[in-house]
Image 1 (cartoon, rainbow, N blue to C red):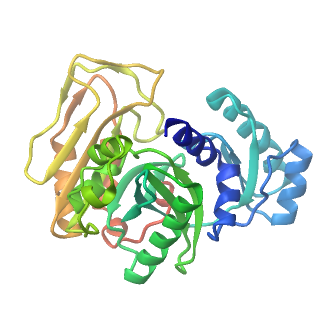
Image 2 (cartoon, rainbow, N blue to C red):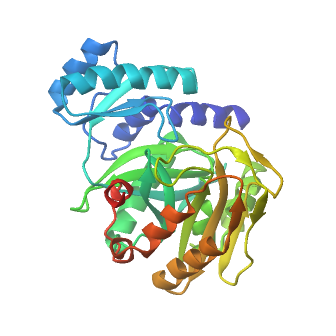
Length: 344
């Protein structure tokens, strides 16, 4: 079983291979080139065929690394070299591919579970459109954009991919969604996501526990007697040790680090007071999740908890997170992946 899971990770962790598999499984994918680019001339040729703007992406990428938007030949040439260099230094794999850049999309993902006996389910979606540097900073469940029909359609597409790869474990199938509602496969993460907690809060399902029990060979049918339903809303804000304006990491010694205990709020902290935030790892300090019967309540609880956190010794992005959550556009759920850039 471990060898099978290893092969699944290798396939789905490779964006080029997973794109090909998604196509074979009948999923809609962003128009693009399905092979690694040989060199900068190949990048220019393929970009001209696809049509600008395009996105240059690392096949082994993640966390927003190895990605560049190109709007013309000059930016494509520079973007290819930069993306390839960053991909090599970050992942030890410099393969780059290119696809059409979709302007102002939403980023919505489907949580899936699959056991070793051929059974799989999805636990609905998370909205992950609030990002900086192509990395998520605020997530919520359910998405305020999807209706029942679109939720079901995306869920069915996610499960088609799970079955195509014969996947076994917890995982996430990610999509980008145009304002029209059309959606395209983006990638599959063969693991739990940072934001899995919002799904746990609205479904009552312990995803960590289920992943372990699935790995031990238990059947989904005995772990979940019925399809989990969503109850209420959950909003997560990722608190990073970084400057709110430049959004660059801010390492340092945490002379004060206190998180509040509040009803309807779940905080998962990565540090304790007295720890040092180094420049060598992701600067995530804590995840603040507010839960409520309404989206407004969940947003409000997340905001109150963010303001109640006490952190000295490093700068944090908490002020930016608060600005996002209290903005009229966020409250109205008018979201897309350019949201943070538009707010600054």
